[in-house]
Length: 529
Image 1: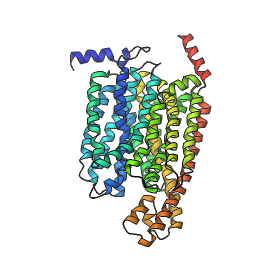
Image 2 (image 1 turned 90 degrees about the vertical axis):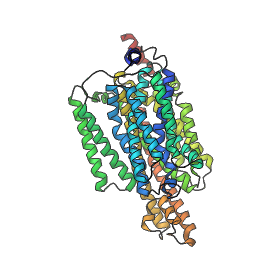
Image 3 (image 1 turned 120 degrees about the vertical axis):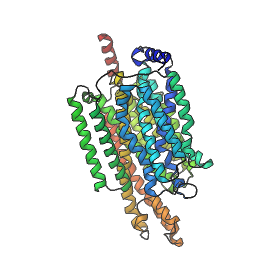
Image 4 (image 1 turned 30 degrees about the vertical axis):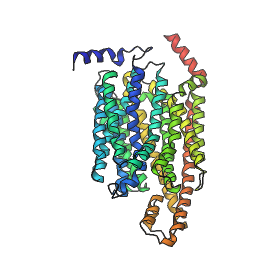
């Protein structure tokens, strides 16, 4: 390391940044971190509208249904499994260093994915992308915590949250635009120049920051990796198969639960624990953790089945489907940065209840969608959902991040992102199973002539029709029955999501502080100081 670099890191270390000022380049650093974050979140959803293209042996790589599922799942599995461990590593060895390593790995994996020759290669390259993403994600938030003052951090966090929501929504839109004009590899290749620019700017502007030099909790890290990978695999398997009673589902789930229980017990008995379990005795910390998991459980499931509704039932192209997600992204980008002002004016509880109410409203609209519903209703649904989440997630994230000292920011960031990722995956699996089983029971009655393998999902039904498994004279009636069955199944699934939203609202009402409580807490802190 050069003398100049060493001096820069020493001067700019998070421990040297005054709590009331923040880093002088903090807003530029935020812009670079948001750029890094968007490509991570974007790659969680970018494949949703590329499935049909990748399955095509001429325009794509001839992937089977199982291979298509694992192109998504390999990324999710590795990403969720390594998130918490990389947060600990970042606190120990340097968050900036880990972010740069993550960007490099992610960029290389994106380049390899763009030129994959077969489905197996793409699955493994997507897993490598997951490694890079898991290193990047907690580093962006922990670096953010270190360069901003306590006063400005909530505003910065609102922008960070907007990037999370917008990235997820922009994935299908960007993929649709690229697939309209270029070959399928472009959805991965576009990451490469972004990675190069982000790495250059981070090297120049971002400070290095670390946690205290304590003994590394190696056992805890291993337990989280094994536990989260097993738990996530079981959830994914349940979502893919629609069956929870098989060994391939409950076996990994049981292993994950047992190992994560062992992690909790281990953390309680060692003095250098990665995650201080006493934090969960703080009702607001525990409530914020629960809100993050519950909202993503409900919201990601809705976005998942809305993708099928838009493209299959409504017949929109990948580009058109992607554009329909734009209101969600726009709402997140507009309202998330403003959420802190709303919290200061009305208090976390009032804003949280309003946000959860809007999310439930969007879920309620989903229960009323039909095969002939006008497009503007879907636009309204996504706009309301984005507005609700943008006013609910920043207060929850701020409460969670502010509950730990800055030197433990990586662990808090990893916990928040793990809850978000596992909550979203569990929502897709659980509510996806509800949808699949209800669809199967409906379509079996409405289209009994369908082969058994074509009754699992609306995609499999349409696939059977395209492959000629249904006589031409019956095609119209079968497709009509499939659409109606899907809509009915979607209604039931959306009502289940509303129930989860109600639970989230109850948590907010019981545990989020009012404006008066926040002001009293601040006054007490000033008097003690």
